[in-house]
Length: 299
Image (tube, rainbow, N blue to C red; front, side):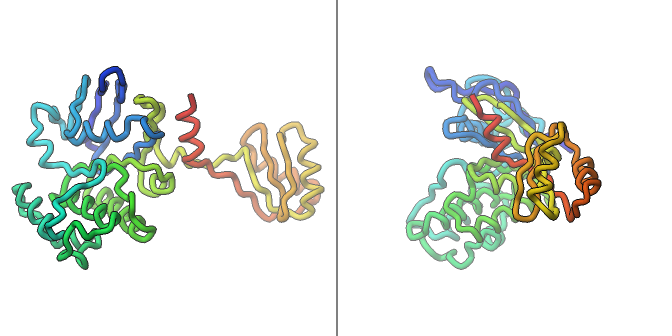
């Protein structure tokens, strides 16, 4: 898969504050990467540098194989972005704003399409000053996709959206990545959004990259922590607790919660069956993005 974004030892300093410190990342075409981190981690600064809104102190940014400084005009024409809160002239209608932005892009861009996919067609004649925060956010997303970009840089794009709008926005972004191979660099504080949308997650703390992994690997199954559905839960828990290869065994209404010294679910089931218990199923614990995040941001 083609690499469309490279950050090579990128740093940004504001006076004595090092907001981003020697950041290295790569993003491939059709990939969605979630950028996570606590407040002040450097996420928005990173997105601002990629979008060309913040001048980096050092390092190199390459987009579509082009130097982001020397070929800025060529690069920016192939990008879309939503960084911080979107701001538009409040006296213009939604449609006029998008038509104005389309004219500035110099492309024959589909304003009606952008209105439709962001759910703004019903308020296209409403002035921006009368829009709710959620509708303003949708307008920000509409301008980001207006020129049909190959790379999208989105800083918390679902902020202010209701549950249904958030779901539709995430589904649309996933469709852009899967069907049109748009690369998306995406930040959010909502773990569920990142789990649903992103192929990879990158975690920042104190301006540094502390972890980067495929989402599927982060959300893998932990076969050392099980819920065993069986009869006679109290007896089963007592029998398991006496075994050396079991760390803990706790009776539940429908079975036993077990932690093992190794990942050996088969041994657990075989042991209980050999002791005369009826085992109806074994459910391993699913690792969570929140656990991964907390571990990666721990001082």
